[in-house]
Image 1 (cartoon, helix red, strand yellow):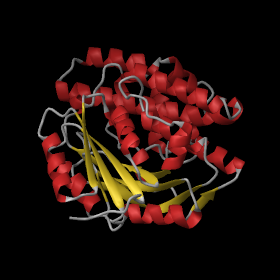
Image 2 (spheres, rainbow, N blue to C red; image 1 turned 90 degrees about the vertical axis):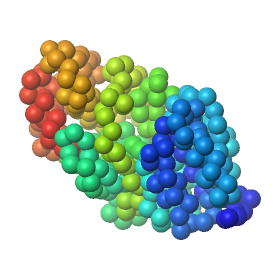
Image 3 (cartoon, rainbow, N blue to C red; image 1 turned 30 degrees about the vertical axis):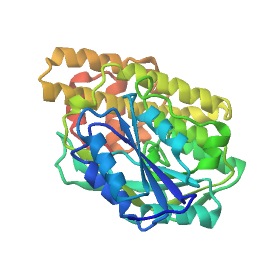
Image 4 (cartoon, rainbow, N blue to C red; image 1 turned 45 degrees about the vertical axis):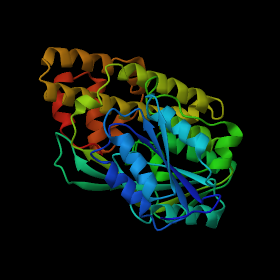
Length: 356
């Protein structure tokens, strides 16, 4: 049994719900981290399967593991429970159906200590496929070619903008990525400013808002090369992730994000970043709608009506009014053109193109 010091270097928070199929892979990857001075907080979110019992068994084997059992409330609020328990100098996150490279937290923690950074960002790898992609595929999203410091007011502003979107010519829709699980956060900042997750049942992309809130209160961050987190497309049905309210959740998210940006950055600076992010979400929403329709044999008339709602959303349609969509990478440009001109029938073909 592995023992730990009173204040771990890193606390890793893992919301757990209906994860028994993948939980071994996730937890084993965390227990095998080359950074031994960690605590692993498994938050059983009222799982109806055997996930909760599995968490208890892990805790018996490794004293670094803590288990919280709670009523179901979703991943965002489960992470908040984990934050209340965490004792580490830094906080990391993982989802129970993903896993981490064994050197992930040693690398991120090393960068945090080397540079005195409150936030460390890295890349991640996508593993697996969906109904338009073959299972077993592997691709990396890399955001930094070398260690990159953000330590001036202008640097931090660039960081916040780069989390919130990107410029038309850039390859990725978010310059520095939106996922929390590829990052490391100084716990003292979270506690000092009371930074919390919103519920994903009320808003989309609550993790993006968490990182923007966090970045708004720091003086130094560092981005490092490499992809250490494994984001898994596990081949499960899109139906499990499909939410009929997702357009509303998206609109709430964009409103919350703009409120945060407008408090610190002029609109003429942040608008083009938000426009790019809006189009990215429009592309995702359309693709999800089409994949859900294919898997569940939904009549195309119904799918088309839902696509129309997405494309005529004020946020998405207004993002394309004056946007230079032709400067986007090819795949994003195709989608932007189809959305702008409301060519719903052709969007099914575009959805089969892998998102760039």
